[in-house]
Length: 178
Ligand code: 4NP
Image (cartoon, rainbow, N blue to C red; front, side, top):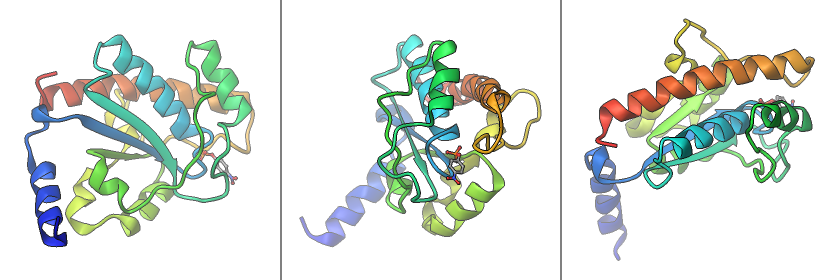
């Protein structure tokens, strides 16, 4: 297919009403070993429990390249497993410009991630970029980086992410006939 036709097709798919296709959600932090894999694991589980695993796709990535190919941090895996989430199959990857074409929601954990993503996003896809905390019920405005702190930081990430995941699923439900 000619390049021009491919571009036209891609544009048409991205303009299709969301109820006619899959919804794709990408969670993004810095390293993709603590916060965003936690968000991926929690949201994936919620989507599965809602019977929407065939409708909503979930992934995560990091703005940095330090941990590409690594498993989530053992502290994140441990904290998540105590609440019934399995992060162990996940592997870190770096976010790309192309992710903005493929995903409907690109959700940053903090302001630093948001700034990096704004620089990466094609202008016509920038509306997909939001903070995960936009979906929180309690006015929180960031998911703090737990990497350099103690276990309570990982618990707090889980608290925020579990709350935001509920709000996100509700918001997707209002945009679609899922
Ligand atoms: P994350 O946490 O962004 O939630 O995955 C971090 C992981 C690694 C580093 C920083 C934050 N690091 O500097 O290596």
